Image (cartoon, rainbow, N blue to C red; front, side, top):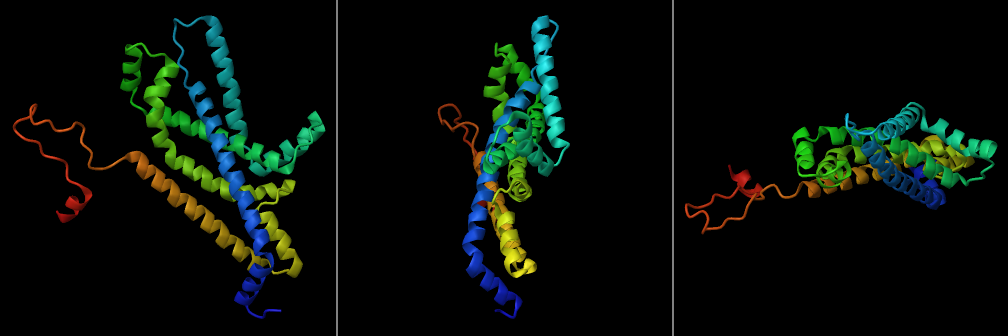
Amino acid sequence: MPETFFGWVAFLLDQYGTVLIKGAVVTLLLAIVGTFIGCLIGLVVGIIQTIPLDENDGQVKKSVVKALQWLLDAYVEIFRGTPMIVQAMVVYYGAMSVFNIDMSPMFAGFLVVSINTGAYMAETVRGGIESVDIGQKEAAVAIGMDHFQTMRCVILPQALRNVMPQLGNNLIINIKDTSVLNVISVTELYFASKSAAGVYYKYFEIFFITCVIYFIMTFTASRLLRWVESKMDGPKDYQLVEYDPMMDPCGHVPLPTKKQKGRY
């Protein structure tokens, strides 16, 4: 048996490296799929929450929209106001007790991560939509667009860029928070680490390895999402219009590029 800390780390990696990698893959799968579905849920909820009502709308439309918004507000408050570990227990065991549905731990994990992320993203999307200048909404209405056309063509393209940092933050949170799903026997990274640690009672060594794996996953996700954000921003030296010498005989001064800026 090893006698040093790093000796045990190397030994445990050799013995349980495959188990830990499989657990990390499950963690990433739960986080990525759950975040993606949660973003779709949040997008739909955020759009519905921002449906405008005015005096010219019929009573039926007002009643339906208000009732739907009240239900969605309740969904957001409940899932933002309770821990994911409790939600996992309620969904997994409650489905069998109340509805006699025997769902697998993985399916329950996907469901819990998705609806939990959806509740947080709903508020993020709502804030992103409301952050777009009101003049753009009024201009869209002035040319005859309805609410959903305005959302699709004018508001959402800008709002989605504004909420990208929070989307990335939710992904990183989900990579870490999937560890709570071990209470319903989802074999993610924490569950695999706990099982491996119990064999030799080397909890510090095995969870040191686990900590490094979690950091690698979250750091990589953070850098990838920042790269996506930079691509969404586009080039910094773009021109609003192309230069046409026939239209502007006096000349045209282009904006400086990044390399040119560095010379000043």
